[in-house]
Length: 396
Image 1 (cartoon, rainbow, N blue to C red):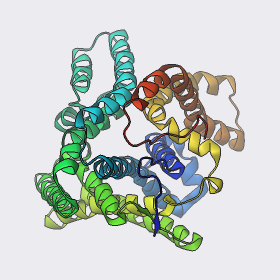
Image 2 (tube, rainbow, N blue to C red):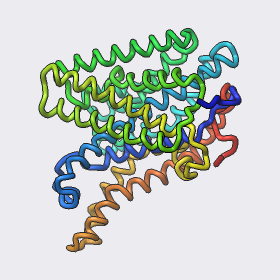
Image 3 (cartoon, rainbow, N blue to C red):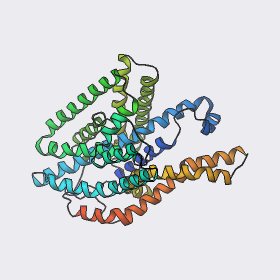
Image 4 (cartoon, rainbow, N blue to C red):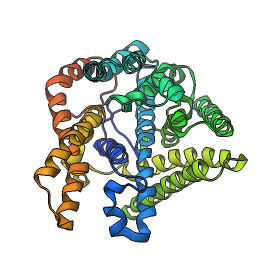
């Protein structure tokens, strides 16, 4: 382990890269097909018998959200522990001010856009009411009870989970020592696993389980436990050890995705309940492996564009479903204009419209938002920082 200097500062550019990877996985989960799709049979044609592996991998991309949660808990816990060690206490009010300035402006801007779209769609009462649930950070519970709805803000149910985590995290770090923080995380894991077992027993739908806050809290516990295990130090892994951690992460997520599919489609008895519990545990473990693979990499080993995209990753996450919907709206017209009977150009056009166009739109919207909308709030947030967690200079 390598000790970290400067207790009052904790900025790791490699964690920005992890943020970008987490977003990219979520984006791929929302754009790649996870089963037989007549509109995207190119995959089946190209991969043949390997297509199921592709579909399982596409399903495993959902764990980009697990990675987001694990990283968030790790970083929040690290910053709060450093503040407690440096000042002897935690200024919880300052913590909430920082979180509000980082999350609320963009979050409520997106909800406003979602509400406008709901009104343009004819003012569907259920859609408008659901956006209202999101506005009071109850989007996760609403999605868990009633399922997801058709609006570009639907991925933002996860923000509700984070906000609920923020209700307990600072107090836990302020009043519990490291030993009792471990116990606290163990209780969360136990409660999450027991709740998962119950949900599987009553055959709860997949979407209802995925959006359940208590289920997702297991990822936060994993992030806190990783922070406590490292004790403020950076793991000094060799390159081959880091490369080995990546397939470990992939195998965990693939096994989790495969186990989840078994539980949903084939197994409904007690074994199915344990499969569900194990799948979510593997999702958290895979996230820890990926974090360890990147934590400690020097900035020179990281592409600057990935660091930048990680810094604007909140905007990427917020806007990506808007961009996907725009691309789906314009894609039929583009396909008509570039209609071709040749297989290869048609395949490239489909890939470009399915992945390239929405990704480009997402990056463009997030970059503009970060520069002209989010930056003023981030500057205000910086004035309330106790432990500096931003680059020394913009673009650093």
